[in-house]
Image 1 (cartoon, rainbow, N blue to C red):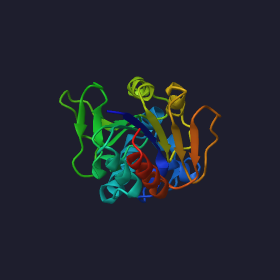
Image 2: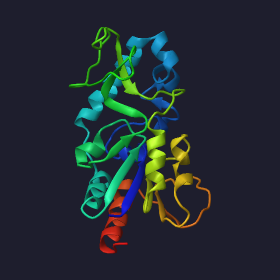
Image 3: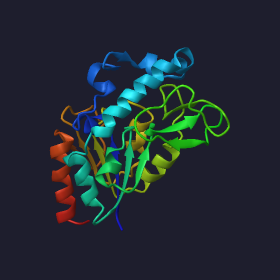
Length: 230
């Protein structure tokens, strides 16, 4: 079965009503990323960081997948599909995608501050100071903060290197290391970039640019791939 790999970013979530850092120059409803999304922020003011992610989680609970998310589910009827997402929400899973790799962590999971292997699902939207792991350590959001290593990157590179088609949607291709995944896709492989504000993309073989939103561009591309199997 042919393998389609999708790199998704903030743009596809924004179309479901989820505000992103990218929308406001590094701000999320008035919060500077340095105050809420770095290890330093956690050590300086853990309650503020917890409140910030609680608000994001509360918003994500009611957000619904859009036509872009649903189009990717359709692809699974005919192809092996791996979604590598920079997003921490669960909209791809809500839509029904079965293989989603979260590069930057998952909003609805928590992690022990004393043992990174202890990861828990969050029921509802709230994670509080005093919520602890089985070993007694405070739980933190299971998010890759700015300045932290991206543990799933090696797996993402493996997926990109085995792609028969590579799709980029809703990302500025400015956040590394995720933006570098394109470099691991073989030259002969078709590469599609879908974004209404087309990011700067280095010229390379078999690159196709679609200056559209995820909700319109992805359904068109998916129909093309389903109607014309490769």
